[in-house]
Length: 300
Ligand SMILES: NC(=O)c1ccc[n+]([C@@H]2O[C@H](COP(=O)([O-])OP(=O)(O)OC[C@H]3O[C@@H](n4cnc5c(N)ncnc54)[C@H](OP(=O)(O)O)[C@@H]3O)[C@@H](O)[C@H]2O)c1
Image (tube, rainbow, N blue to C red; front, top):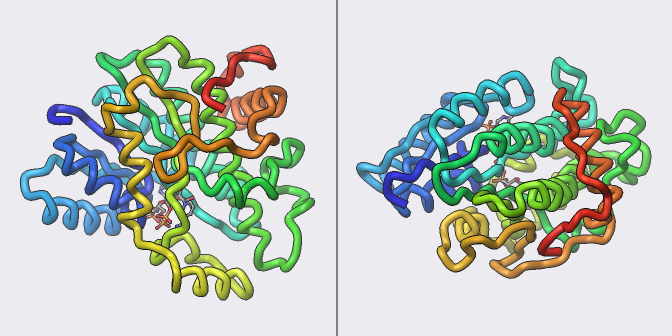
């Protein structure tokens, strides 16, 4: 990928940093995006040490702030990236709201990639371009369908018990939105030189995802950490989707361990997918650009 520009969001640590390492190893100039300048700088230094001479840049952005996402899109359009990996995510407390009143989990995990990739997609690439959206386990997420009447977790309906798990359920819903967005976007990009696929990185230890966890959820996370692999393993499937020539042209699918995997029926229903698309458009202030329900959602 020499001369290519690749972007990774959520690259200041965890799985995103390892995706950046892999992209730098492939010869791409890597633009690492996350919120904290300090954490990003340290991560970029580590990538630079792993691959002396690698082209590594940082672009600090709070993806929970949609005007900042729009500004990022403008900067990236000028760089014409051939790979964009949307990896940033957070499990925020339910009362953690952005200044626009959005639940931070919804804004960072779903609305930011929705807005960023839609804006980038509107600018045709010079050559083949790949979007990769890092989601989560289709099996685990089957139990937490998106509540299309309460995307912003206002009512807290159906978030279950115990209360310490509720932010995790709200997070799970946004991860289902990732798969639904991949299918909706792929149907709109069909026939273009841009592909989009989703990936579950695996259950991975030692990342920052559980930093706001409390009570039973914290205990659950610590127990999982005893048995799960590290971030470099989590980076494998997203990196493969971003770089491997063997999947050139493949689009609209969701992958686990490099294998196309079905996601829950509530994520593949065209009516639900288009309803999420329209509601997301309203929340980010874009036209919906409707595709009729029943459109060809490929790769499911
Ligand atoms: N770890 C797992 O077991 C697991 C399982 C399934 C799916 N995943 C998915 O894998 C991806 C990576 O997660 P991870 O485990 O590596 O978590 P992580 O270590 O917490 O990494 C999340 C990244 O997102 C960034 N981020 C968070 N809020 C942001 C904001 N408002 N603006 C910009 N960047 C922001 C963080 O950087 P700053 O805080 O510096 O901004 C960090 O770089 C996520 O999509 C997650 O849903 C992880």
